[in-house]
Structure formats: C-alpha cells, structure tokens
Image (tube, rainbow, N blue to C red; front, side):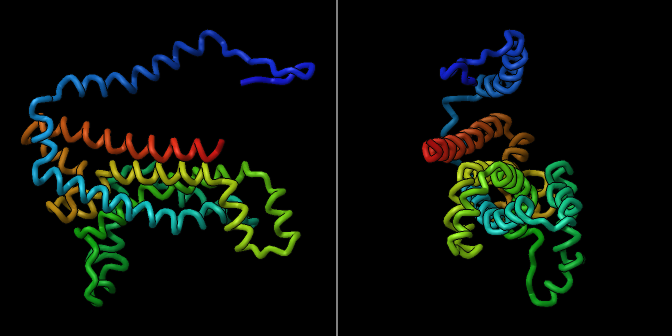
Length: 269
C-alpha cells in the first residue's frame, strides 16, 4: 500500500499488532491440514486413492462440478449483471433471496430441491408424468451443486461490475454499439478477473458439496456418490482411505484454484 507525497510514492506501513491475529488466522487454517498429512499411510496412499470406488467418485465429482460451473456461468453472469446494472427498485428485495444459499445449511437446500424436483415435489409430479426423473440421479447432483455454488459466482461478479469504470461502456454506447455488443466487448472484458474468481469459487464449492447432494441425490456408486460422499462412507469403514481421499480432494481443488487464479492474475497485469 502506498500514497503520493510531493510527486513521490510513499509506502504506507501496517500497524505492528496486525501481524499477530493474521498469523493466528493462518495457523488456524494450515494446522489442521498439516495434522491430516501426518495421519496418512504414505506407503498405501496410491492404492487407497486409485481403488475402483475412489476413481469413480473422483471422476463423477469432476464431471458434475464442471457441469454445475457451466450452469452457474450461463445463469449467474446475467443475474450478476442485472443486480449490478439494473435500476429496477424491486431487486433490493430479490437479492437476499438469490444469495440465501450462502447462509442456509446445505442439507436444507437439499430438502428444498427434493420438495421441488422429487416425485411428489412442486415440479416433480409433472416431470414424472413426462417420464423425467431427477431426484437420486446424476442430474440431481449437478442441480444440488449449482444451487449452493451459484451465489459465489454472482457475488464475486456483481462486486466487480459495481467497481468497474462505467466510462468505457458509455463511450461504446455513444459510438452506436448495441447493449449486447457493449456487454460482450467492453463490460465482460473489464470484469474478467472477477468473473474468473467467481468461476473458481463456484467450481471449488461444487467439488466439495456434501449435504445438499446427499439429501437430494443420495449415494449411489458411479451415479451420485461424489468424492465427499465417498470420504464420508470410508470414514466409517477405513479411516486411512478417508484421510487419503481427503488429501486428494484438497490437492485437486488447490490445483484448479492455483491454475485458474494464476492465469487470472497474469491476465490482469
């Protein structure tokens, strides 16, 4: 952090006391991960994470997390744009409802989805008459992940849109560009770092989703049993396998976050 003084950029220091709570917070986050690493049976790590059930759960998690992230992008970008740019007064009442999945327990979200898309749900009865079954299928996993992760993308992108400089959009509009052209060629490139951050958060949240998935989709191997559910089941049967799979899930999420996050930072420079 810095400020200008007499034409020079002067550094602004931090108060000395702030490093102590910052260090305590870092230790609080890192120490449990280190503790888990100390419990891994390293000679058996590869066999534990490459078993048939583990590979099926990992592949299903990656597939459904990718699908749910795409859904979040398709509907989340328009939602964030409307929340940030629209002048409709009623949005201030709608916004808390859209962001509600951030604060409600995931299992409550799963129950809500079940009463919406289940066979006896609000829409499930009509869908069942058409031969469409959603609950306890892979589609249910994707919907559950989308439900809990969508607000993360919306919040991140909405914040970026609100802080973006409107002058570029106004200039483009004054030159005759249509609203869709302005959005595609000016607005979205301006907020690309925020969009990338939201995408990463949505994918990571989808990858780690447990409660809503278990409630709405169940735990059928190869169909709805994602990696978090596999970890939960292995915790009761084989603690070593549960720890190994937990580390694998953390590693996969870290790789995605670092890869996309690093690309985002390079693009912003």
